[in-house]
Length: 199
Image (cartoon, rainbow, N blue to C red; front, side):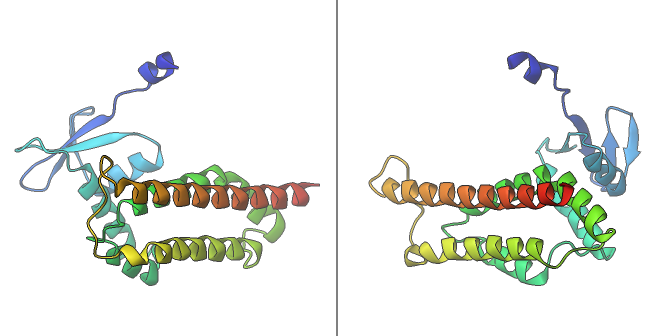
């Protein structure tokens, strides 16, 4: 296990200068956000540092890439989703959102090829507004239910692990585990649909 981790190549270091230029230290060349976008799609890991301060600014640069892609008309992020996401900033439950989104994307990625094959074979590449749309609705509804469960605690300070209020955090973690279980159930439904189509 450790050998596999050791064999994983180190992330490419990108430096961002005051003039907003990005420098790839691996290729000794200047790159653009489009280049970084392509690196992400190719699975090339990288970190971005501010050349002056040395701060890790990877998150903000990745966010910039998303903004650029959205500006080009890609529109992967629906407006209601963006509004809801913004509303969680500063909320005492915002710690749950990254975990939920990360798990959701991991689940979607695991099924990406199966979904693509299913769309191609069953619908000639057209998106089936049927079972998959229903899965999406279930996913969103599940998330909203979880947030409503935590509504009574709105405005309260986030609980500390070593305090009695930590019991609240534990309960929230249990709810998150329940969300993971539901996502796994949705994944199983997808696999069943794929198997049924192939038989």
